[in-house]
Each structure stands twice: as C-alpha cells, then as structure tokens.
Length: 431
Picture 1 (cartoon, rainbow, N blue to C red):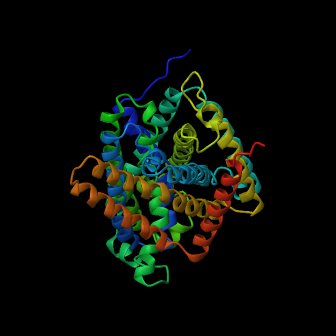
Picture 2 (picture 1 turned 90 degrees about the horizontal axis):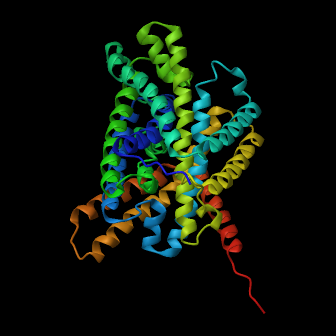
C-alpha cells in the first residue's frame, strides 16, 4: 500500500490559488469587456460578498471535522445534505468543463481548428480522460503540476497588474465605462455571474480536508491567504487592461493577457508565449477541480446520498471510481454542447451560468450550518451572524442577476436531477 501524501500550508495555499486564479482570471477581461469598466463596481461588490463566503469556510474549518459544503449541508439536515451534494458535485462537473473551454480559448491563435465546435468538444473529452488517468496516481503529482503552471500564469498576470499601469489611460478607462447599452444598475448586475464563477473555489481546501496535514489549523489559514492573493490579482489586472485598450478590442481578443503582455513588452513572441502558458495553467487547474468534485461526491456517498462507488479510494487515497463516474458525466455534458454547436464563447457562458447557480445552494446551507453550530454551542456568535447574513445577501443577489431564461434552465435541471435521484434511490418493496 502506498502512503498517502498530504499537503501542508504552502501546498494548500497553492491549491486554492490554482483553483481560483487558474480558471477565473484568464477569462475575466474578455467576459467583462462587453459591459465596460463599470464592472469595477461589480468587482468590489462581488469581492466583498465572496470574502464573507470565504469567512464561512474559515470559521467552519475550526469548528467542524469536515468543513466541506456537502458535509455542512448534511449537518443542517440530511435531506438538504442529499440535495446539496447533488448540486455541488454536478455544479462542479459543469464548472470543470468551463475551465477546459476557457483554457482552450487561449489556444485558438495556435490551433484555429478549435473554433469548430466538434473539434473543440473532442479536445475537451480527450483532456478529461487524460487528466483523470493522471489524477489516479495521487495528489503529489497534481500539486507539482499545478504549482508550476500557476506560478507561470501568475507571473504574466502580476506583470500586467503592475507594469501595465505605466500604459494606463484614465480617459480610455472612462470611455469604456458602460458600453453595454444598459442602464448602470443592470450593467453592474450583469457582471455578477462571471465574477462569482471567478471566486468559485474558496472552499477547495475545505472540500479536500482529508488531503491536508493538520486541517483544523491549515484550512482556515490557507483559505483566507489564498482568497486575498487572488482578489488583489483579479482587481488590479482586470482594471489595468480596461485602461489600456478599447472595450471592443478586449472583446475581440479572448487571450486578454497575451494582448496586454504584447503591448507592455512590444513583443508578439512574448504575447504568444503568455497565451500558451495561460492555456496550460488554466487547463491544469482542472486537475484540482476534478479532485474536489470527487472528494465532494465521496462525502455525500459516505452519508448514503450518492452511489457507494463514490466512497471507494485507491492506494493513493484518490476517489478513483468517483473520478471515472464523473468523467462519464462530463463527457455526456460535452457531447450535448457539441450537438448545440457551441463555440468557445457560448459554451463558456452556458456552463458558467449553470454551474454558478447550482453551486449557490450548498454555499447558502454552509452558512446556515455555521449558525446552527453557533446556537448549539450556546454562544452569541454575533460575528458569525454578520458573516452569514452578508454572505446570504451575496448569494441571493446572484440569482437576481441571472436572466429569466437562465433561471428556468436551472429550475428544469434541478427538477430533472432530483426526480432521477428519487427514483434511483427508492427501495424495492419485498413481498
């Protein structure tokens, strides 16, 4: 039997930074450019909300043996735990596809064929199974790969967020203020979905607490450090790009940081190298999220809410059967996107919206679990009530920002999944 390798503080910080920055930051400038630099207000509001959501997992990490979203929802109520497990696991599976699509978007300049929905879909499917095979051999190799690629990604983003200010034009930034054609209120809300997606992953260390050394100490510290690092990177780098180029130019260049680095260094070669590095880092972050999805599924399976196959772990401590099951589900989801003829932009938007709205359910119940624990301990916990209240407002605002069509799509998906789940787990009556 091989010995399971566990992560210390540095590894845990890299885990959360890679799960956030790896998939979130590279898509932000291009996605927000259709609205304009007014999304700085959206950024501030979402960052505050995400901070309080992060604090829920910081607090839960010190109070619960398992502070993952599915475990916290189960602590509130077994039925909620079952539903939240479904939403969290399958919301993450949809999100995993978004990550691969975002990374491949940065490769379009090298492989124009990726603009074809069929070729894009086949590439996503191949990557899904290649990374599942890699993940089966333990968390150690995953940490090394992700650490290297995210470090390369962060170098490009940090250079943009610092040296880019030398080319920042306040007049240009002001001219990009609101290019959406909407009033300021709806424009600010329109950026919420992609921004919330950028912060999805604040719970990644908590979800993988079994892989963390001394989790009650490391999980809270790593979570807050990782959040602060990523929040600063997000805001500075995205804002500076909005003051370097016209909004239309950013919209037409999915590889936003390749655009900024080409401008800063006056070198097309460096811009292309950055695009390649960004793509690799984003795609590599899929390793972290795929592992998190399987770990969350194991939590639900251990409580009887998902098939027992999710509870199985191999000699490396990896939920190997769960990874394979999730791989099959992600493959089917990608086939649907292929049948819809979705290109990089449309596929990313569809998957981001669905994943965010599904993940908000377990996020909400995580806060309620913290309040329930506070009351059971017989303490006032005013700070916990404040944290949960602001976090809940943040979560509800995300639903408000969604379009009616998006909400109906999520409702239909939730009803279908729960119906299949109820039928699947209904015991047969013995005569």
